[in-house]
Image (cartoon, rainbow, N blue to C red; front, side, top):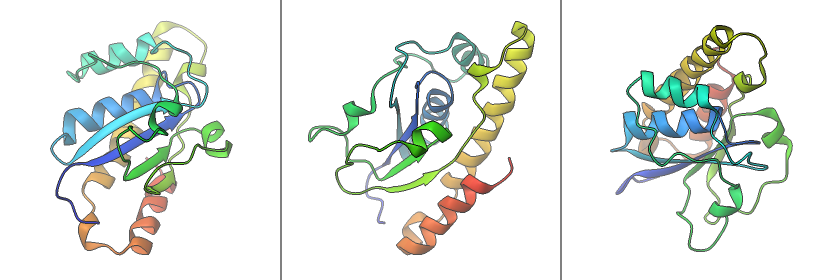
Length: 167
Protein backbone atom coordinates (compact mmCIF):
# COMPACT_ATOMS: atom_id res chain seq x y z
CA UNK A 1 0.00 0.00 0.00
CA UNK A 2 1.38 3.33 -1.01
CA UNK A 3 0.47 6.33 1.10
CA UNK A 4 0.00 9.49 -0.92
CA UNK A 5 -2.84 10.65 1.34
CA UNK A 6 -4.14 9.50 4.73
CA UNK A 7 -5.37 5.93 4.96
CA UNK A 8 -9.09 5.66 5.72
CA UNK A 9 -9.90 3.39 8.66
CA UNK A 10 -13.38 2.25 9.72
CA UNK A 11 -14.00 0.89 13.23
CA UNK A 12 -17.14 -1.24 13.47
CA UNK A 13 -19.21 -2.34 16.42
CA UNK A 14 -22.82 -3.21 16.94
CA UNK A 15 -24.12 -0.09 18.71
CA UNK A 16 -21.43 2.44 17.71
CA UNK A 17 -21.69 4.13 21.10
CA UNK A 18 -18.42 3.43 22.93
CA UNK A 19 -15.52 1.27 21.63
CA UNK A 20 -15.67 2.22 17.95
CA UNK A 21 -16.30 5.87 18.86
CA UNK A 22 -13.28 5.96 21.19
CA UNK A 23 -11.13 4.33 18.49
CA UNK A 24 -12.26 6.84 15.86
CA UNK A 25 -11.64 9.83 18.11
CA UNK A 26 -8.24 8.62 19.38
CA UNK A 27 -6.91 7.78 15.94
CA UNK A 28 -8.00 11.10 14.45
CA UNK A 29 -6.57 13.09 17.36
CA UNK A 30 -3.27 11.22 17.50
CA UNK A 31 -2.58 10.10 13.94
CA UNK A 32 -4.70 12.45 11.84
CA UNK A 33 -1.79 13.21 9.53
CA UNK A 34 -1.47 9.52 8.54
CA UNK A 35 -5.03 8.19 9.03
CA UNK A 36 -8.61 9.39 8.77
CA UNK A 37 -10.73 7.30 11.11
CA UNK A 38 -14.47 6.68 11.02
CA UNK A 39 -16.78 4.52 13.10
CA UNK A 40 -20.15 2.90 12.59
CA UNK A 41 -22.42 0.17 13.88
CA UNK A 42 -24.49 -2.64 12.47
CA UNK A 43 -27.38 -1.62 14.77
CA UNK A 44 -26.43 1.83 16.04
CA UNK A 45 -28.10 3.04 19.18
CA UNK A 46 -28.18 6.60 17.91
CA UNK A 47 -26.46 8.01 21.01
CA UNK A 48 -22.80 8.13 22.01
CA UNK A 49 -22.27 6.78 25.50
CA UNK A 50 -21.74 9.68 27.94
CA UNK A 51 -18.89 7.83 29.70
CA UNK A 52 -17.05 7.54 26.37
CA UNK A 53 -17.50 11.26 25.76
CA UNK A 54 -16.37 12.10 29.29
CA UNK A 55 -13.25 9.94 28.98
CA UNK A 56 -12.30 11.44 25.62
CA UNK A 57 -12.87 14.95 26.89
CA UNK A 58 -10.77 14.28 30.00
CA UNK A 59 -7.99 13.00 27.70
CA UNK A 60 -8.18 16.24 25.65
CA UNK A 61 -9.42 14.32 22.61
CA UNK A 62 -11.97 16.28 20.57
CA UNK A 63 -15.50 14.91 20.68
CA UNK A 64 -17.10 17.40 18.33
CA UNK A 65 -18.97 15.68 15.52
CA UNK A 66 -18.94 12.22 17.09
CA UNK A 67 -22.23 10.43 16.55
CA UNK A 68 -23.65 6.93 16.53
CA UNK A 69 -24.32 5.93 12.92
CA UNK A 70 -25.01 2.94 10.69
CA UNK A 71 -22.33 1.18 8.72
CA UNK A 72 -24.61 1.61 5.70
CA UNK A 73 -23.28 5.19 5.46
CA UNK A 74 -19.89 3.78 4.42
CA UNK A 75 -21.14 1.18 1.95
CA UNK A 76 -22.36 3.68 -0.67
CA UNK A 77 -20.58 4.70 -3.85
CA UNK A 78 -20.00 8.25 -2.59
CA UNK A 79 -18.63 7.18 0.82
CA UNK A 80 -14.92 7.50 1.60
CA UNK A 81 -12.92 4.58 0.19
CA UNK A 82 -11.74 2.53 3.19
CA UNK A 83 -8.25 1.09 3.31
CA UNK A 84 -8.81 -0.75 6.60
CA UNK A 85 -11.89 -2.03 8.45
CA UNK A 86 -11.61 -3.25 12.05
CA UNK A 87 -14.40 -4.89 14.02
CA UNK A 88 -14.02 -4.11 17.72
CA UNK A 89 -16.75 -6.33 19.13
CA UNK A 90 -17.61 -9.98 18.67
CA UNK A 91 -21.18 -9.28 17.56
CA UNK A 92 -20.17 -7.13 14.57
CA UNK A 93 -17.45 -9.60 13.60
CA UNK A 94 -20.01 -12.38 13.26
CA UNK A 95 -22.47 -10.36 11.20
CA UNK A 96 -22.59 -10.16 7.44
CA UNK A 97 -20.95 -6.87 6.61
CA UNK A 98 -21.90 -4.68 3.70
CA UNK A 99 -19.73 -4.73 0.61
CA UNK A 100 -16.90 -2.25 1.11
CA UNK A 101 -15.81 -0.65 -2.17
CA UNK A 102 -12.15 -1.28 -2.89
CA UNK A 103 -11.99 -4.39 -0.69
CA UNK A 104 -10.20 -2.88 2.30
CA UNK A 105 -7.95 -4.98 4.50
CA UNK A 106 -9.84 -6.08 7.60
CA UNK A 107 -9.15 -7.58 11.00
CA UNK A 108 -10.99 -8.37 14.20
CA UNK A 109 -9.81 -6.48 17.28
CA UNK A 110 -12.22 -7.49 20.06
CA UNK A 111 -12.61 -5.45 23.23
CA UNK A 112 -14.92 -5.99 26.18
CA UNK A 113 -17.98 -3.74 26.02
CA UNK A 114 -17.62 -1.15 28.80
CA UNK A 115 -21.17 0.07 28.17
CA UNK A 116 -22.52 -3.33 29.21
CA UNK A 117 -21.03 -3.11 32.70
CA UNK A 118 -23.34 -2.36 35.59
CA UNK A 119 -22.39 -0.80 38.89
CA UNK A 120 -21.56 2.65 40.13
CA UNK A 121 -20.40 5.48 37.91
CA UNK A 122 -16.88 5.05 39.30
CA UNK A 123 -16.88 1.36 38.33
CA UNK A 124 -18.08 2.28 34.84
CA UNK A 125 -15.44 5.02 34.46
CA UNK A 126 -12.74 2.55 35.46
CA UNK A 127 -13.93 0.02 32.86
CA UNK A 128 -14.12 2.67 30.13
CA UNK A 129 -10.56 3.73 30.93
CA UNK A 130 -9.34 0.12 30.89
CA UNK A 131 -10.90 -0.53 27.47
CA UNK A 132 -9.74 2.83 26.11
CA UNK A 133 -6.14 2.04 27.08
CA UNK A 134 -6.41 -1.29 25.24
CA UNK A 135 -7.80 0.45 22.16
CA UNK A 136 -5.05 3.06 22.32
CA UNK A 137 -2.35 0.38 22.54
CA UNK A 138 -3.63 -1.51 19.49
CA UNK A 139 -4.02 1.67 17.45
CA UNK A 140 -0.49 2.73 18.43
CA UNK A 141 0.85 -0.65 17.27
CA UNK A 142 -1.05 -0.36 14.00
CA UNK A 143 -0.07 3.26 13.35
CA UNK A 144 3.60 2.41 13.74
CA UNK A 145 3.59 -0.43 11.22
CA UNK A 146 5.61 0.20 8.06
CA UNK A 147 2.42 -0.22 6.00
CA UNK A 148 3.85 0.79 2.63
CA UNK A 149 6.83 -1.55 3.09
CA UNK A 150 4.75 -4.66 3.82
CA UNK A 151 3.23 -6.98 1.25
CA UNK A 152 -0.48 -7.72 1.65
CA UNK A 153 -0.08 -11.08 3.36
CA UNK A 154 2.47 -9.78 5.86
CA UNK A 155 0.32 -6.77 6.65
CA UNK A 156 -2.78 -8.93 7.15
CA UNK A 157 -0.85 -11.20 9.51
CA UNK A 158 0.33 -8.21 11.54
CA UNK A 159 -3.21 -6.77 11.73
CA UNK A 160 -4.53 -10.13 12.96
CA UNK A 161 -1.69 -10.37 15.50
CA UNK A 162 -2.57 -6.93 16.88
CA UNK A 163 -6.13 -8.10 17.40
CA UNK A 164 -4.90 -11.14 19.33
CA UNK A 165 -2.47 -9.19 21.48
CA UNK A 166 -3.21 -8.86 25.14
CA UNK A 167 -3.35 -5.17 25.77
